[in-house]
Amino acid sequence: MKWMPALRPERTRVAIMATLIALYSAVLALVTVQALNGESLVRPSAPTISVASVLALVGASTVTVVVVGSRGQHGRALQDAGR
Image (cartoon, rainbow, N blue to C red; front, side, top):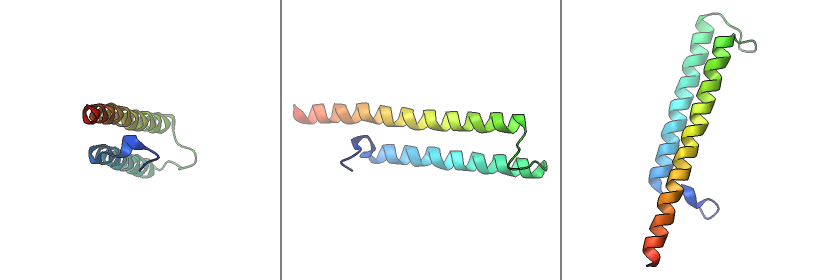
């Protein structure tokens, strides 16, 4: 993966996949609750929109933290290898 060195470490890819799996499960649960309440998918209620917004924010933040954190570890590994 020359185009994105932050994703080289397996630990980073596993953490991103775990985040995306959790996010997918949360969205599935949200849609299930929405269906059980008889809400339309195209006109969700305000609480549903709020929960969806929080899920998107938490998911994006978590992936960002994982990628930025791994970039720091990758940079340190390169510096150590260069010594």
